[in-house]
Length: 352
Image 1 (cartoon, one colour):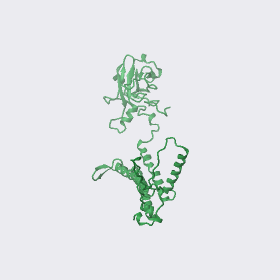
Image 2 (spheres, one colour; image 1 turned 90 degrees about the vertical axis):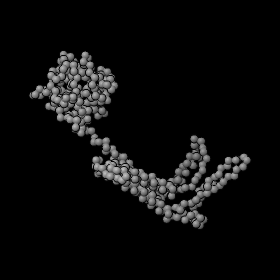
Image 3 (tube, helix red, strand yellow; image 1 turned 60 degrees about the horizontal axis):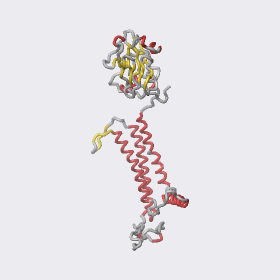
Image 4 (cartoon, rainbow, N blue to C red; image 1 turned 60 degrees about the vertical axis):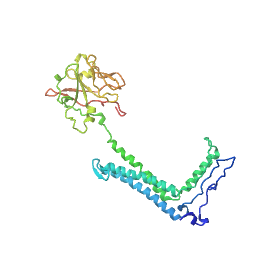
């Protein structure tokens, strides 16, 4: 059905009488404004049943978007991350990634398609030409903008077509839940895990290079040795995370050269153990100067004095390296006498 088949009295009133008006070029105005083409009414403008069909189509698209968003959340919660499926012609893919991509894509597409269909079939399609105006809008222009906004709101029929409005609000309200669910991949809350390491009373100090327990006689004066807790293996799933907190520097000093009383009390025959993790941004410290007993972080040159409680003497680090209290067990191996008494590595906001 076209507008030519509808009696004139049933056609909607034109909103802009400039449609179809054509200016004639002459000597004074050789480039005349051709005007706007005649306005063609859509079937939805003429037949309310067609408008209802378009309304139901838009509502259906918004409803599919809501269902797809729910499917996204269900897929995220229920599908194992290690499950693979075969999808032709892609091949074997992660079932979780495929489900998340498909449902989120459908949810976003249906919102966009519903909005486009709504605009093209139910909102006013009358072209309006407006002259340019100065940037600083005068009062009459502001009044016109407000009037145009009210007119547009009226023409959108948002208040009258409640089915579209309610399903659109539902789709827009549910889609952000997809992003909220993705926050789950950030992992569990750290709790107090940043304050504790694998070190505990009785844990032996194991050489990082030889993977053998250390005795005091294995550490020469002026040498630097790296150690890890006994039982921590490279095959462990959390090896890197745990080593990033528990890695040790072991240095042997002459007891007379130790200036800090607590450092001396927590040592064993001049063997001292400090965290290897720099307190600036967490880089591993590995540069040791025998004559001064200073260690240098290679990242930002923070320097610590291992003969004076590993206090900061240069660089951006905010506090001294934590010391681990050590002793020997019944078999003569070096062992921890507890965990660090303060969090290792860089400061964090809940450090206390």
